[in-house]
Length: 212
Ligand SMILES: N[C@@H](CCC(=O)N[C@@H](CS)C(=O)NCC(=O)O)C(=O)O
Image (cartoon, rainbow, N blue to C red):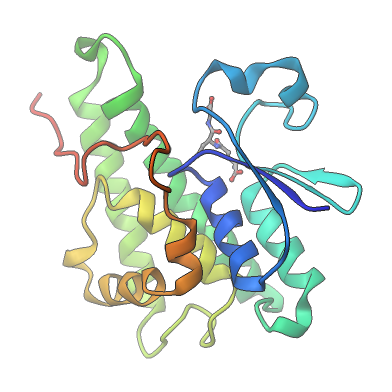
């Protein structure tokens, strides 16, 4: 039995998307994005109390991009695994994007009271996030997907963009914008979106960099 522990609009969405791409049977366990992730029962699955946690093959994978790699290689016949340095670099580049999104989510949404938030940190993180789009823009010159053909690396990157575009719009990066459109049109991506009634992390489509 495969079991995915998931919160809507977080990095666990990339694993959910991947499971749908592969057409696997699995159980989905939804969690609140709150202190319940620190319950001892959940900490036994994820030592830092985060999502995702993927129970599979008698073990637990608790890093989202490791989960994508494991699944892609477990089902290599489906053609979503790459090889060599390009595969590893671009699969893991999703985290280079997501680290800035995590910082921006903390600044714009998680920190209370709002006066404790830093406009300067928001500006710096948004600029650094834009630099990651620039890198992706370069990689996508003459390529439809980062490895040429669609792979699990695009699942990681597409989901990283899904979260990141709340803070930096991809429109200034035409290849990235078109890439995101292509990825988000996939049926498996659409199935991994928040379902009706699920608590959302982002209540706005876009969070402006605050003054100050
Ligand atoms: N590098 C980890 C990061 C996991 C992570 O930080 N997940 C966030 C959601 S995107 C989380 O669970 N945060 C809850 C918390 O920090 O309390 C991965 O890619 O799986």
